[in-house]
Every structure is written in structure tokens, then in C-alpha cells.
Image 1: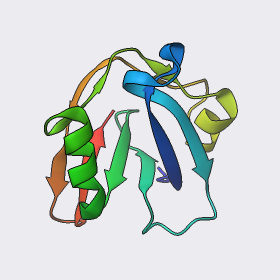
Image 2: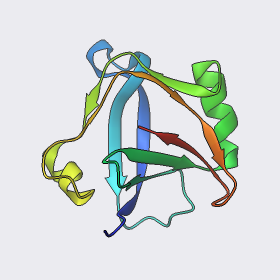
Image 3: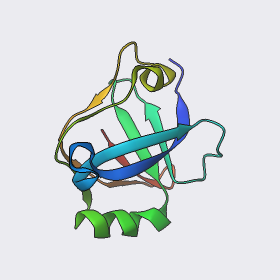
Image 4: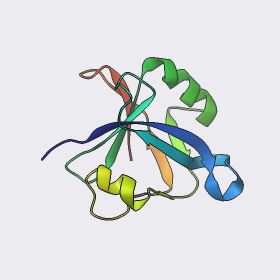
Length: 114
């Protein structure tokens, strides 16, 4: 299975609340930006997504969400075109919930599995 890795920017907040609260308000994807920038998504064998980010962003995320996790107060569905670029056949939904932040020493990044 080919792993798909792309660079993205995440706007935090609830889309239904004009980006207020906790959740994903929007995602901008650019496959031409180098991997050492803000975020990357990759599809894994369990059909979930791993959100990778560097050490510098870890403190910002912990401060925003008040702990070692992100909180999504509502689900967020990627559009079909984006989902297909990630290797999914249909639009992928990130379910509401709390997702722990884990340090991946092997890759040297923090990650959240969505």
C-alpha cells in the first residue's frame, strides 16, 4: 500500500459556529509545500489519518486546547477531492471526540491519530 503524505494547514474551531469553540473549521491542502512545514496527513492501514506536527507547534496546540489532546466538538468531513487525494474512495469524516497528542520518537514529530 502506498502511503500518501501531503502538507496541510488546519483552522481550529467549529465550522458551524464561525470557527469559535473546539473542532476543525477548515483545512487547506497543498501538496507542493515541503514536509517540514506545519502539518501533514497520511493514511495508514486502519483507514484513519495521522496528523503530524513539529515541536514548535506542540506548545501552541497544548495552549489552545488546554492539554495534551485536541478536542473536536463536531465531526469534520473532508471534501471528496481531498479525500481521494489521500487514497479514500469517498469523503472521509473525522469524528467528534478527543484525540491524544503522542510524541513519535522514531520520526521526531508529535502526532494525533484521527
